[in-house]
Amino acid sequence: MSDQTMAGRTVLVTGASDGIGAETARVLAAKGATVHVTGRSADKLRPVAEAVGTEPLVADFSRLDDVRRLAAQVGERVDKLDLLMNNAGGTFAPAKRTHDGHEPNFQVNHLAPFLLTQLLRPRLAAAGSSLVVNTSSIGNLLGKIVLDDLDYDRRRAIEFPAYGTGKLMNIVFTRGISQRWSGDGIVSVAVHPGPVGSSFGRDSWFIGLLYRTPLKRIGTISVPDGAAPLIALAERGADPEIDGRYFSRFKVDGRENKQAHDQAIIDGLWERSEALVGLS
Image (tube, rainbow, N blue to C red; front, top):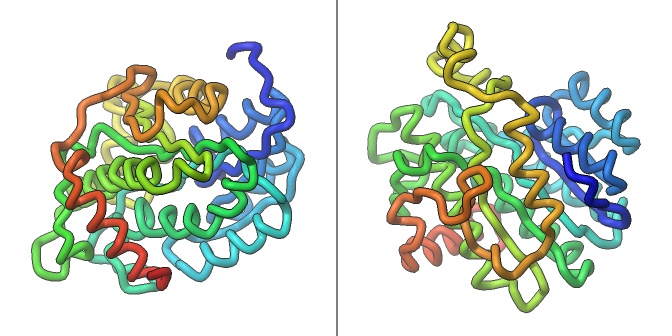
């Protein structure tokens, strides 16, 4: 951990109940930031919130009304937001629809953080110079965005490619923010933290099974190692040089699905997402 201070910065970390979200929150708080944390498990989130010194914000990203309530609560707590870390996500069985009727990999990994970020835009802009970090994955290479079938209503959804599509959307959303919000002083970046040996896949029978085998010890990195790239970007702050870019751990311009630079996809996903959450 570097000795760079985060004093004076206000941060929101989603997916902070455990894993790299919790680790990132603790480290940034130790560096002096005021860190607000959100997650869907009140029991798991409570000790993290106690560690960083703020009240927990419980929200389930499979419910968009929870996201709206979360944004309102954050707006009541803070006048400005220097750093939003969209870290919540996971891999889910596509057949299990969310409360809002969406394919879960699409909603939890993209649509919910899209909505949250949109609603928090005034607080990000109020900071004068702010950063949005979207946790993505190398799994984006397996994704495919079909603008007219975001919920897999007309095509077969296979779990890991559906997850990869959500992670591809994180990069596409990052590009959208870069193109649309730079006038507000908002910088966005996406990052693959690496194959972290945390509770990733707990909502997936298949991925969860793999993570309960010796393969987890062989093929994964520790939670602190996984959080390190997120912390490094947080410390770097709203650097225009990283705006709209994708990091594979600490390496800028990691391997991306070709759709990540397709302007029709960048614009189309933004517009359809706005319509789905009632912002258009």
